[in-house]
Every structure is written in C-alpha cells, then in structure tokens.
Image 1: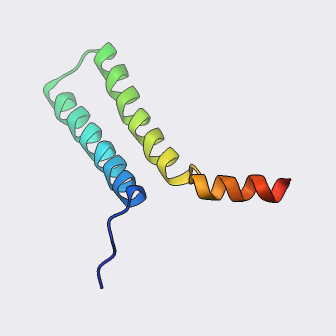
Image 2: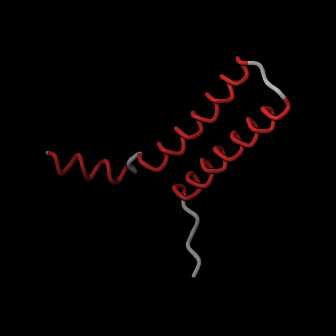
Length: 73
C-alpha cells in the first residue's frame, strides 16, 4: 500500500533534509578549518534548521486550529 504525498509529509521530509544538509555542510567546512565567527554562523544554521523541523512537526494544521478555536467558543 502506498500513501499519497501530502503537503505535510513533503514539509516534514524537506525539513529533515534541511537539517541533514546544514549539518553536513557545517561538518565539512569544520573539517577544513573555520574561524570562530564561521563556527557561530554554522551553529546558527544548524540550530535554525532544527527549529524549522520542530515547527513543521508541531505547528497545528489549519483544520486542527479551526477545530480548537470552535471548541473554545
């Protein structure tokens, strides 16, 4: 059984790829040698991509947000 590709699954896989890509790029350039400011930028990129991945997985979909708003009213 195959599942259809949804926007949510595409966003989840894309954000996971972003984390992998930013981590691999930071690791590659760290192996070549980086200055402290470059380390700071690489760390910000990795933590930023992790933040995107967490937000994609925890942000409520519009339907769920509407349901919660209606339940509160």
